[in-house]
Length: 531
Image (cartoon, rainbow, N blue to C red; front, top):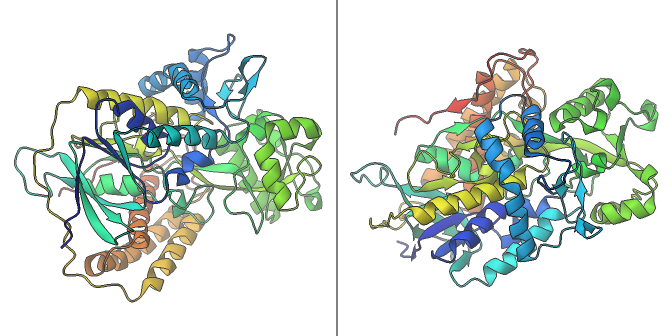
């Protein structure tokens, strides 16, 4: 029996921009635990290249930013959430500047770039590695804050609720169980407030721009606890992931197209530009449009990839604006100042998630979800570029403000994790094989273009996998691989169910069987079965 037990005021699962922002906001008045299943910098936030959208230019406006977001979101954005996030942007940027984030400047002002779907230059950035610069700064601040304790190599197992313990007085989140890899034991964490900031679920697909940590942990955990989820059929496929056998999930930022990059067919297919034939906005169309256009051209012509060319902008311009992309490509023998970049679409962002309000509150009191884990209604059917880091900060600050005003205390004693009836797994290879199978059939059946038959096939395969995984979870000692696979299969089921319910094509969900846009626009909300 494991006796590890920790008490805090707030538990935060996830060390990306959302989680660390919430931790820093709460630290003056609360004892905060930040749990992350690898090291602090290992989440998706560090991988974000483009920047943070914010209305800062005199010729820009909140109304224009809201309008661009709604257009990209294919009419499914919640206007209240959109306006709240957009109007919270300048304060968030100022806070990051105060912390010392080294944003790129020009003429004594922040340099603003433009990305696909934006009608103005409003993307604040640190060259082409904004997420890494922001995360470095926040991690330094977190490590220097006495009231924040970091638990690295701790994988979320499940949250603990009053209902699970059979307590009277209604449902509430009381804490969580987490696997401590240093001891290989499950520790108990108790707190009156728990924040899920675990990111998205990109690893459910074979090709993704996401890090290995993006396994849908928070979404699956909240669903099992009894929270609703929304809009999970809307998985954003980034149009331009580097296509190279030695490159693992390396994103080519939207800003390359924003600064004049052109998408071309290979020389063998004519070497011509093709986006103007698909959309009047050409390369500056929203991501769903560009990803489908690339997918169309690749399937029509049997191509392995297409090409993104920025070389016409000149060597000095490219090295100033995209030094990290240039360096990474150079390592692979590609000189982007002289030749185009081979690219393919890849799963990039989970637009749906755990349904929350604008304070990050889920259906369970004491349990919050923020960042890519959550669905506030901001992104609708397709996220506008560089709105994600912005949402992380605005909702983290809102959740922290709500928690600061909540007087709830952790009173219930929590039982230690009992694994006395399980044994060590002797067939770990089954876990890796199931993971590979899941990612491949999700890519084949639930990708950029879907059909009813493909979704049915995926649902059938998921049901078979769930039976195997449930057996493993019940009988064997938990491991990070098993926990991640359990969560990925759960999220895959929710993605497929959501896609089957949407009998239209909207934003990121495109069905050959339902190609038209339906009215009125409505979110897809799934309600967990009664416990």
